[in-house]
Image (tube, rainbow, N blue to C red):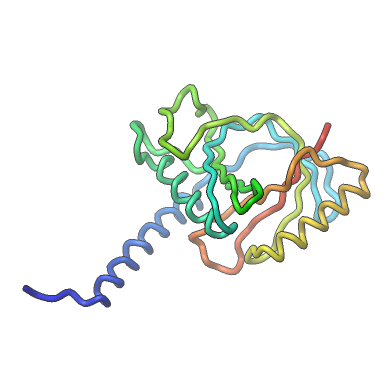
Length: 198
């Protein structure tokens, strides 16, 4: 019986992972984004109004990178048809992530228009379909490859700007990713969103 070297096994795993990443990258490049209204632009900062949005979400423990990577994979699996009947669902960017405290994160995919818990097969354990109500969010971009330190810095900038404008946050900051965590390039587009009290 011929022996299979670890080099070949690892090469095979790497090939499969690269193919999966390429598939997700293609889907991401053809993804849509929700329509919103811009209420204010002030330099690097914006206030946007979003309509109610249906979301597919999962809660994951661990660091931001770990929770986002695992959460993205689970959500993408459902969107691509794993564990449910029906066609693939187009990806809608951005992917949202918000800390739940105690080393846990909620990761969300925005569902395409016309899809909701009423039209889709219930997801498996650890996934849920919900609705983000219509809301205003304050936004600042996060240039370059996102890191915890960079997110903290830009979040502080946004919070100071909101204080200067006399606006009050209605919830914790959210990270909005416009590229998948499988894209390891330095120029990953992302934003910080803060929901605002009316």
